Image (tube, rainbow, N blue to C red; front, top):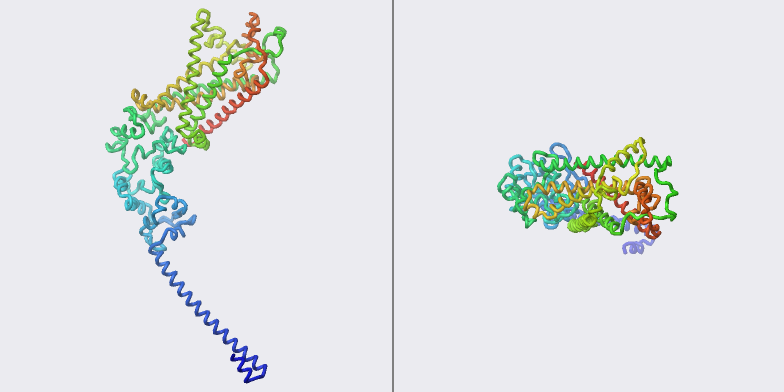
Length: 601
């Protein structure tokens, strides 16, 4: 309007334009000045709000404020000695803990209400000694029990001992009865009690826990949680007078024998655990002797047989012209009853091995998933027991059959005859002859119906099954065992059962497999135990003495049968190779478990 009036009063175009431009410039400066004033006012107001918020956070910070610094990975501060002290708190772990859901950081860190903090403990002992009283704010009963314990007494006397955060953790506290907390407690205790932790891990309770299952006795179940006392203290839950009552919590039918069980027994302390020490040395001697003899025997056998085959050396046997005219004939070796018994026995033994090795080597990477695959410790134990009953039933049925057979044929039965499995002088001569053949000092011996290694395979289970059945029954029927025997018998039975099981498994999956399947003349599989018969030419080579006797007596034809059908041969070949493959896998995992245990020990 002002420009317009000026243009009317002063109609000069040039002057009018200049006046209008000047007016616009003054208007723009006024607008900019107003905007600056408004911005300054807004900044002052915002600063006032931020100051008020900062003051509130400084006196009453929430968890988000604390985690703004402490939730950053690598956040740390120097100790009094100059060493870095990690102050990082995982936000996820804190949120998942019991305290993270109901408490604020300042509920525990009550002196750290100023940001930045000023009242900070610089020494480890200083802040650790305050923890029991701090936790007593919400858990006074636990604090009172703790002060009467060995830990509380040590903290008072020495200024340093296990405190609440050592067992329950500082920021990831879980409810004590949850499986995760029960599994973690053994690891926490072992950080200070390494020797007891190791011995616990070698017994059944610790083995189950190491597999990831909490349904077993942990340290707190026996020793208590907060009021832990020395075993010499009459008030201790593991004192001799109270031990049976402690056992009764999990074993309602426990007897006095349970009280003498050694839950922390080791095999390297003769003074404290003489029975365990002697048992372990005895079983170790048996293992070394067995494999020292038979692995050496297998290596020498393989070397000589392989070399003979390369040199195309023929075995001494009867001339081919004397063979019956029939071509591709087989010789019967096993009836259907024995073949079925062998197969069921083999399958039950493999299942026993699979269900047992997880407890022997729970710290390996493969043990926990294998235990889960079997349905957990309870189901694995049931499968193990059923398989044991089946294996022992077959063994006992075999004994009954043999006794009945001997009773029926006692007039003609020859205890040391060619068809008897009793060791005799000829076996001793064969062993000497084999050793000479191994080193190239004599011909390969010829065998009768049984060779000496087959007799070893026959008699070995009498020792093995007796040891496994006796020790397994003691562990299975604990209450009955403890009613008549002292508790340390469980420790001895555990050692015997585990070592004998390993001895049997390694023997069957290495030595037995080698003699019957892996040596050059048999590799990769001998089907005779599945089909029941073997080629006549192979029979003549492997059992030359029996072949000659039958031929001369005119009885060979009675044992000849047609070759098994191709479908039968194929099916049994797949079955046999599968069993061999499973055995090889078990040998590998058991060897790896032994190495892991050796490194850990």
